[in-house]
Amino acid sequence: MLNLIGIVGTNSDQSTNRQLLQFIQKHFADQANIEICEIKDLPAFNKPKENQAPEEVQALAAKITAADGVIISTPEYNHSIPAILKSVLEWLSYTSQPLVDKPLMITGASYGKLGSSRAQSHLRQILDAPELKARIMPSSEFLVGYSLQAFDEEGNLKDANKVSELEDIFNDFTQFIEITNHLVSKNPTKKAQKFSWEDN
Amino acid sequence: MKIVGIVGSNADFSYNHQLLNFIAKQYKQLVEIEVLDIKDVPMFNQSDDQTDSAPIQHLNEKITEADGVIIATPEYNHSIPSALQSVIEWLSFKIHPLDGKPVMIVGASYDVQGSSRSQLHLRQILDAPGVNAVVMPGNEFLLGEVHKAFDEEGDLKDAETAKFLESCIKKFIRFINVVNVLNAPEGMKDLSSAEDLYATGSIDTTIQGIDMMADDWVEQAAEATGAVDGDTYVKLDRGILTVNQLNHFLNSMPAELTYADSNNQFLYYNHHLDAEEMFASRRPEQVGYPLAECHPKQAFSGVSWVIQQLRKGKQDVVKTHVPTHGPDKFVVHNYQAIRDEEGNYLGINEYVQDIKPIIDWYLEQTGQQLTGGDVDAVSGATSKVDTVSGATVKG
Image (cartoon, rainbow over all chains, first blue to last red; front, side, top):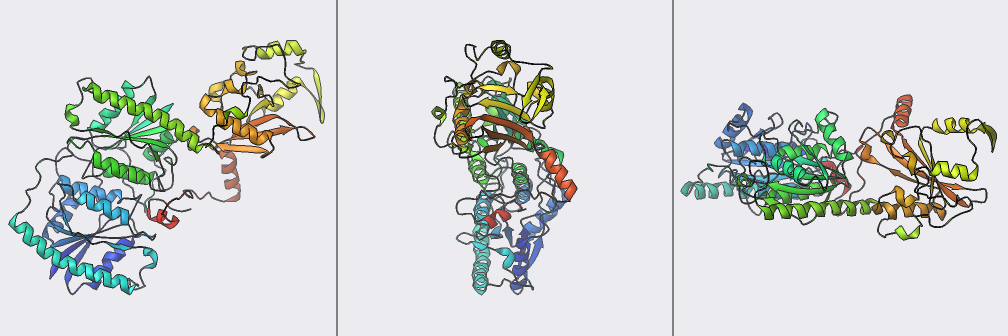
């Protein structure tokens, strides 16, 4: 059984990305234990002189390190990801870098029809930075548009096509985790010693 | 021209702060630049609206009043810092001070990239409908290996780099003027020649033989015409007042009043405030000037357009709101056509008002509320509902 972490990419009380992760958690319960992690109470990143993360961030980092893979579900704010999600990634990259070599899948939901498409492409570029260096599953994109109407009262995705699309992607992800672990076990990344964005 | 420079990092020490300080110092002959920090702005959270907090309102006020904005961004993880992202989310949620505002992007980084990737992200973010800034294209200023770039006085060591930066700043000043034309009503065409703004002609009431530019035009013109003043009675339609009563009456109007005749000469304003206290400043010696001498050249096309609307009877009043007095004032300039009984155009009654106290009073009396943050200017492939998933809440 896989152990996965699902990160809700927003600090909003109401979030269809949270709903999406809850659905994934429930729907794939026979294949994976998925723990949903909130970032809403994490402090804002401010680049402290000592590279020490606050306790809440350390707790999240420890969970990521222990997990077989990570799913991030992001909304779209201003053609990009929310500042709070970016802040968490800054903390992780600035401190223990738990995402390095970690298999990662991106999903997203938005109220409009575009389903967070631009936010997801920004997130990919960000996760590709050397201090994050997550192993993002390529050639996959799961977008939920009109997300306020997408779920029924039990929190299930209403559209059967969408569910089967998600099943395919999740199946890919389980295999991707295996392949990635094989790849990185032979040649693990040395964590960056010096940050390219130091002192700017 | 006033520009604000926003430091895109909340770190205690920031080379981007240093870069903006250098720009403000080096090019102060060209433009006035105030450098602003974002350290105190809280993390954006749509469930905890802090739009009214002091740090956000401070930025809102400064940006609204500015003619343009320069953002200096570092690069964190191939993108802009979360602190800058959070600021932009606040400024696109309930308030939209960047809407239509000319913006220039610069950036410095420790590595050779010079913030190249974060500048591209920032462009895309500023293009989102809730933000809707007008970002200057091209003129990309990337300062790589910034820890080696400045000398002890905080000046750029490399003369070529400073020269290129100066050319970018000069372009930006011109860009601001271009954007102003874009934002002007029907500003596609230069209409400056449609009106005789230098008042070279004359009409029946033009007072001849006096230099329009004379500081004491009013005194000279009064002498030439034998104009009455003081306690002399004047018969009006309908009533009789002394000139003093008439003056006090006009000065008590809840607006700044200006009369310009159909020859485009500035003849009168209700002078009871100093120029600095007025929304549209006038000085006593300006009375008598042709309208061309009361406006900067780049405004001529807009001024001519307004006069043409009134002269040709296309509109009876042209209104424009002027946001540069800050978010706590709703200043409206009204250009009302003055016509005689037959409808002939006699000139402009310009009245300038802050209508916010009126709106506030009315809302308080009736218990109604303004619903803000409604962005209708959504364009391109983005549907309006997508704006909601951006940091904009519909009213």
